[in-house]
Length: 316
Image 1 (cartoon, rainbow, N blue to C red):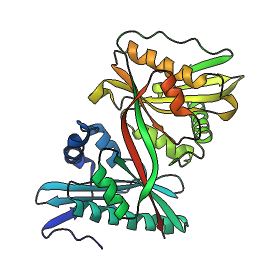
Image 2: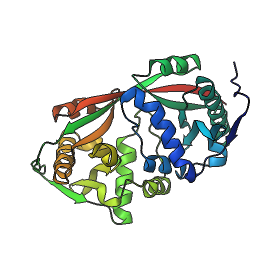
Image 3: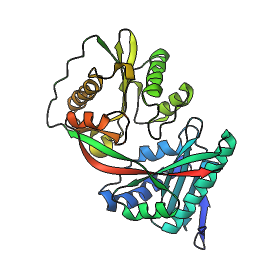
């Protein structure tokens, strides 16, 4: 059944100036569930200014008078065969209405990009059983599970030894190093759940827009003259948890089994500890085709939060 907004509610497209209101709404939703907002003002601003995000067509705000009661957005990547939905409301009717708007927009993406169907993904905390039940009722099914992994730093952490034959390149100040990172990212993450390869220009614009990132936070590993691994970090969790964050860690298949992932992890632990960070955080897909979860557990990281990605195949 199609959702109808309550009488008197109004709808408009979002702007960057709405970031604080979106943050307040997300905090009101998340805090009772997991004990904190799990979101910052910079996160909200980044979402509302994401390259490729068209506020007029891809976003909706729902108001009861002057009070924001719903936020909905859809984000396409690469060829838009797969899209991410972000829907937040404490009112299930508003949530359903926003979801229906986003699904309609997913169909438009499918027509624009020539797909017969589009995969629409949305995240729910494992703790939010009611939302997971609602998503199932709206045609979504479990896609995969992500664990937020964390390790705490109680003092200095020794820097690990660099693996034999490996050269560490810290920072990506020029286009050549950034293109090398982009190539490793696309190849090492190929086939993983929810990953859509992007052109260098699209990926670069997204990195530039991310307020918690700068190019000094990207590290590359060379083996026999070839770049074979990358680690991309951000300050995404500095404000709320004083933790470093590993956003992407990838190793090319030909270089796996040489301890490069563990080196990159332990190296970042040392970097974060030296910067006075309380810990280091990352997210891992527990259905990852590589044994990533085991690697993270082996270096002392532990799961502190569980999130599920729910997926619906939207027929165009």
